[in-house]
Image (cartoon, rainbow, N blue to C red; front, side, top):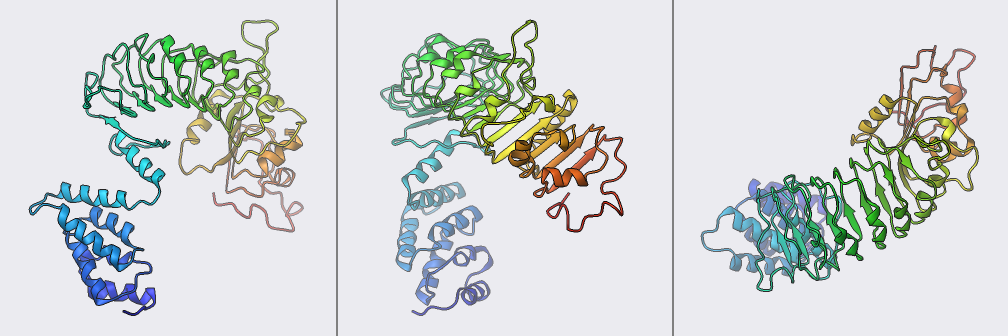
Length: 467
């Protein structure tokens, strides 16, 4: 056995050793020393899957950095596990099982295992780890009734149940799952109500998703979920969420496109809340003071398309006011912020400390249409993660805002900014050094971007600009 440089080894393998359909495995080797014996075992592993791309790539990735002994073990296992006349599905399943068994970290195995709870090609934004896993997974099958358990003790041994994206119309009155950690019920659009006692025996539940259900109100038993950490209730009709105040361990709460009109004072009791998503809650009119400021460990806040009247008078009252922006600005752990602000005057002149927002999408505009446009832009993958949409010039912004936002901004959109005449002064004052994209629209008084010749800078400007 002898070692040769990888570049030379890869070239030789590609050109002489392995035919096209079985070339993948040897080409992904990283530090295995080449030998004729190794070539033989590599060919043997490749032949077991008859050139199936998924099988070849999956096995190549797990064996690519293993020594010759591991390849021989894998070859023996594959030969013993596949029947004499296997179909393609059996071969792919065996290769995936091999890939799974080679994962070193138990957490990675559990994360991989969680994928069975979701339909094919579904976007999985979160992954939760469990110490032991017994799943009931029936997602996207078109089922109309609640599934029957496949275990002798009913549902009592399940740690995860997924019946998302089905047509279920009725749930059992009480689900007895004492060790259930994850329950995924979302997108059962025919489900009109949740029985009063449904959550009575789910004391250990940590993850619950009821997004897209047509329920008008939540059962009181949801308040018994004292160990719940993650709750998704997107696009739900229920308006009263005050019951969530008793869920003391809640860390993630998503209410996107729901019909809530205000944030109840009870949510201030969620001292462990790290993410609050209320994007596109079109009925949101008020946020009472001293609620957001008490969420001291909040890291992510999403309010696009929901609320913008910071510090403004509550409609229908003479002396009640909404929460002021300082409550958001002073959150010590907040790093991701998406927010609408109706006017630059909502921004305080001074703050206790400059916020450390690593990702932000801030829209300052009096126009409802502009705020809606910016909300849709924020959904595009190509939009930078630090965006400022504004209808005012930079000289109207407070100094702390330059350090917290404009200095870091990657995209700046001037829209309907009638005071904008030229942008060079704005560039220097706001330190727009990180800009990758600049958009100027409906700014009718602007005569030029940079005045010439008296205004031509002595040094480059917009050095990082791409668009």
